[in-house]
Image 1 (cartoon, rainbow, N blue to C red):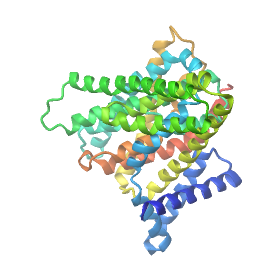
Image 2: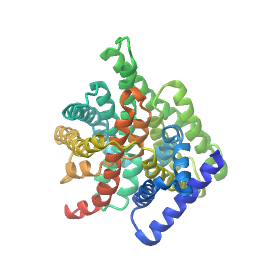
Image 3: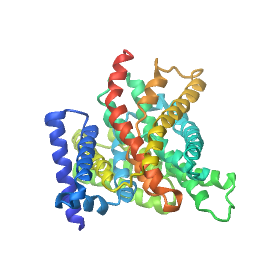
Length: 411
């Protein structure tokens, strides 16, 4: 398939599933579109043996899209910027300590807990996998996906302060997790064994701190440009340049593009909007990025459903994936409980915050994309299937029940 065909079919399918969901099912858009895409994929896999033209074309579409490349190098920058641009920085500042600790210490705790437990789990099934590869899996499955979280939290009636903790953490922890993943991947690829804790720490700081500083620079360059003119068409174009140019340059500078996008989005959505834009521009800019967010969300969750067509199913690994759901939830609970217990002396947390942070920490496309980026020698097929099982459970089960849980907890 050529690029035009891929884009056309993807948008048509996303529009059809979005319409069916809005008209009949009425689930949150991200859940509805993924569920319909997943059901369609399962039906096509079931009738696939007949070699029907529809099944063949669907598999061809799934194979034509490099999900890891499309998400990590294109869609993620737009989605993170669009998510951050609508966050109130003043309110986020009030929650900064909890967000920072959950997004850093929480990710590290979860990475090592998941990695070690999955390593033991593989051993129980007679499938020895090196610990470093299991730690890589721990890093890729630990971040809560901001795209899934932000979309579903809009429907869940929870306190604004708790919603900000969950959404703020999800915006930052995926960037931290990507940095941890990249650092561990360098260790896994190193055949000379010359990677020390110091070199890993240095790489982590270069990526993370570099990404944050570069995001500040991008945000203030954008602020200066937006403040100097008053033309909503040009100003919208400038924000596009911040995202596309900034993410491209971050990759060449070897700093974290996701973290840079979050910081640039926060500055643009707060300082630039407040001090550098007219009311007309603010209105157009908000609607433009809301539309970008909704369209790319639809496409992303369509892709997640279509991945079912090309994932290699192994019965033993599938069972490991089912068990890993509970491992990941347990690790999430511990990685929330410990930081919250430490922070309670300085910060007031909402009642049942640990439960909501645990169950509301959804996994999504970022985890799938990172799993797909693994080399075959890093047990790619096994980890892709396990990741897929966890992500589908997270979005369909946790995503559908987080609102009901909030209601039961009487928020």
